[in-house]
Image (cartoon, rainbow, N blue to C red; front, side):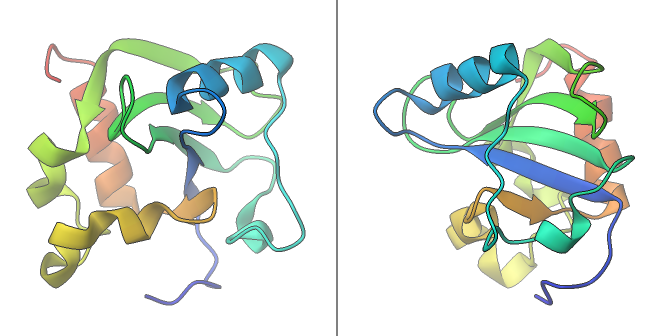
Length: 133
């Protein structure tokens, strides 16, 4: 997968650390702060106007689920849903993950920020609005 191609769609990843990934996500959102470093993958694409989906990695509560959407402004337009989208239940519909790599999908979420294509972005948004986990 080429990593330095311009895209309008990104995934911001929160993983388990000293707290579980979901609590870390909530802390970051409350502070309106997401850590972006010089070596963050997709740094070239982290710009005003980009659409983002938040993913919880790890093994704790809500792990391996897409939990919120937003647009890079000030994260003031963050929309969370009670209908989190489980990657395991929907992976066959996510075209940004190559078919041959679906068993090791976690590789796509390394580094804190990763890109996603429009089809997968739209699919996650649509399924977060209906009662499916």
